[in-house]
Amino acid sequence: MASGPDDLREVEMSEVEKNSPSRTPPAPPALDRRISASLFRLRKRSPFLATLALFAHYRPSLELPTAATDGRNVFYNPHFMAALSDEHFDGVLLHEVLHAALLHVTRRSHRDPERWNIAADIVVNGILLQNGFGLPEGHLRNTELEHRAVEEVYALLPRPQEPVVLDLLEAPPNDAKSEDAEAKEGQGQPKDKGKLFRGKKRLGSDALSEAEKAAIEKHWKKAIQQAQAVARSQGKGSLPTGLERAFGLLQPPELDWKTLLWRFLVRTPTDFAGYDRRHVGRGWYLETLEGESLPVYIAVDTSGSVDDTLIQRFLGEVQGILGAYPHLKAQLFYADAALYGPYALQPGDEIPPPQGGGGTDFRPFFDRIGRQLEGVCVYLTDGYGDFPPEAPQLPTLWVVAPGGLESGAFPFGEVARLL
Image 1 (cartoon, rainbow, N blue to C red):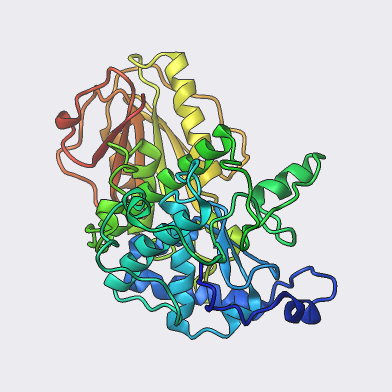
Image 2 (image 1 turned 180 degrees about the vertical axis):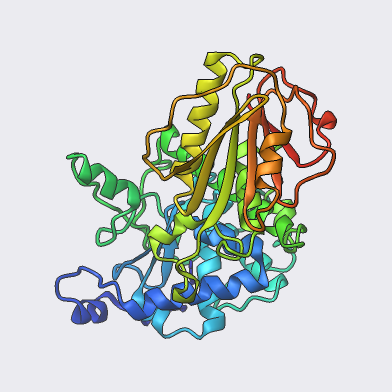
């Protein structure tokens, strides 16, 4: 979090160094557990904000007095975070996550870093406080400006008279590698030397490349899509106060089919009560929720109206499902007028060769899975065929090929279209 000259300056680097002579921050298990617990509390209060928080990577750094973000990662001083109450812990975490999700790092452009950071803090803190979240003493607030876009707040603010500690970084601190930096090192590329805004020490006017900005923006657009899907699936479709306005320019016009599938998955009680399990690999989960798996029944239309090229595309999408959602317990069927399978699939499994080529009848598939009480159905098809007279008990997602049946002609389920 950004702070004024009298705020949070008690955390001096010399004291930090006493606790860590190597200047390499530890990863305290207690703090990992507190982050997981914080995400669980946030899920109860705001599924939207909690899902956004899952898209950040949390990394300790002793170079920081408090916490900061480079647009994707959230860096935090372990000593500072450990001293916070749960209420303030949640608030600080969300403060940095909102900076990242609102693209406050990439939107700065040529503007003065200190003045921009103050403007961004006013916007973020206003959102958090309006929604009942707590922040540590010394936080910035301006109720007259906090409802405006950060660019407007920046234009209305005077230049800061004193140096401030900034929490919007264009590179990670030296002692905290970002995910991108670790990936580069794994590929044999040279290490990035992180630089940190502190006081009058600044980076160039706009150190991020266009490619880096685009990657960050794509990351958070996807996060916002999935956060909206989770909020809707839990009956909380309205965004928290101030966020609909703040995210207005970032919302895509519609969801792609994989996002719709993700929404189906998070509706079920066997999933992490609303979270994509790809985050399990990052450690953000509670131990009591381990060991669950979700059945998904996948049908690929192999009737005569679907050519080989389209079937291969369908199978490519099946591989995408398995790769993106490793917790799934998938069963694959091929279907024309008959049904072939099921084939149990795990991520990385070779997909069996297609069978079919006759007419199109959706009824055999739904008759087969009609006795199932748990899971979701995904049917990849052009949509031209005979439907069952009644909708199945399980949620159904139709993934329709270009030029396929109109969405309104499907008698049940949700329809997503391949582009």
